[in-house]
Length: 273
Image (cartoon, rainbow, N blue to C red; front, top):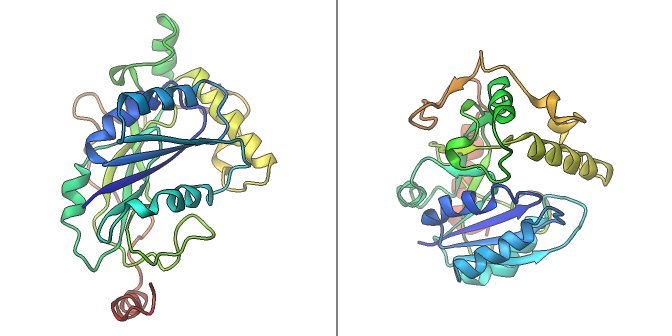
């Protein structure tokens, strides 16, 4: 079983090296598509490719209007490297897995094809602002210097099992992706890391919205200070690293029983490739 990461990035130079190297133990190959960064991200990707040949592939840099189908381009470029039973991951550059990915996926039954994430979303708090302002500006903070307050408030599809006849022409994922595994895999998502990085993130997402992408409604603010929040209602990852149990209120990821039975039938019979 091999694990392939599709990593679509834009302006992640402050975290790309630390994030990908923290995840390398989980993946056999990570394929990077840079979507027009202007902060040195592509240079970092090329340096990582030289440092980890065969494991990290800096595939392409191109300033296309952002759309989810860009990941399909990566999939089609490298699908010949995958075999039935391998896994593909939508790997974001600003996340680090908590659960050991290989062990987790090895225990997913063969008739389950999809794994959802359980995201520990880290926020930039007033405490982080004070810490940032009290010391020298660090362009590439160590993991120990990252925000420590989080909520477990997001979950979405993250992994899918490879099949030779998968078709991916539109949308965020291939057609007839398969049956969802009940357990979710845990990860840390460092979406807000420094004032400069937050501002770049907001600017990039506003630009994507102007170019026609409609799914960045969570990034409409114009200035990084609008993303600063209080730590009062957040969980603190002071030592262990965000290992809380799955909370209530997350999206329900298991299909209704009739839909699940239909998937078993259609995939088991080969009608859905």
